[in-house]
Length: 423
Image (tube, rainbow, N blue to C red):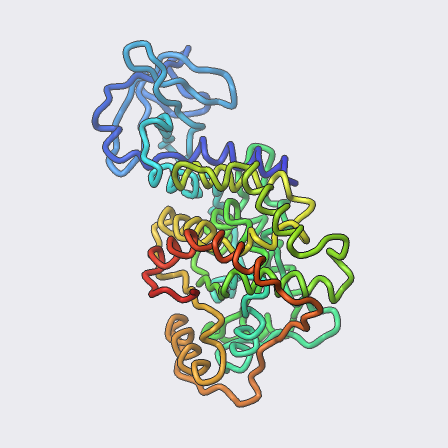
């Protein structure tokens, strides 16, 4: 799966990197094509329409026959490529110029990466209308997602999760289902929408009936594994459920990591090393992948992607530290929203400390307001899941983790415009 995603994301970046600012207006470019046409495109007099915020026209001279791309030259120097043509209606075919990465700022490259330009939409497809009623809770594990899940289940505007024995507590669909992504990396929107809808129908048919009958109802996909896959999930969400609201509940990362470790101990996992040993191993993994030494957010994104690929099959015990680096992961999801032309306010983030005691109702009120629902009062029975701790966190380990997370927490506060929350 990791290798597949590498191919998928590499092609996605090539085909979708068109956030180039003023680059287009500064270069007089020619696209070389050997027969004065883009293969399968409608091109007149050797000209191809190039799409961006402002349209331009470039001559076609020669084509590089690799994946149908054409080489763009300026003064005989290759400066960009033209991706495969895009069909727009019956008579108009568009070629997209992709500037070289050196022409883009780190933020522009982030937007290019997450632009979702490889989402293939079928004009004849008729997706389930209730997919527009989805709320996606992306994380974080051991951060308070179960508590928020139970709160929303009380809300009359939500189609409750099923209580059948076969119902899945966490769908984690977008981590596992790649059957709608073809070998070129194109996201087949209709195929994935169909698979996603079928999974929910199988998991909870009664909820689907409610959603179908009442367009005001919402359904929660509570999948905290989505958060770590922040290098892939934003593109998939943009393509498959582009109108979904996104939520995240986060927690003091040091406490979260230790809680996660104890959670696995309950099930007999991760017992062959101490928590301190797992922490050191995880930090070393992050360092070797280049995450800790990245020079800018885009370099960090590439390192994060590499880390996820290398450790795709050993995430259970070697990600206790990783999952608490919220600043990196949430920046990716916010970049995904920006790239899709959506406001970053479509992502709502809260910290689990506000789900306790007297803060619970006011925090829930903010969530309800974010979702555009009517006010609702929580019952006294609303629960918060608590992990049973079999080990104690040593002061030295806490100090090490607090020091590790401190710069990332500062970035998080700046990103979310929060006052400092954790120490």
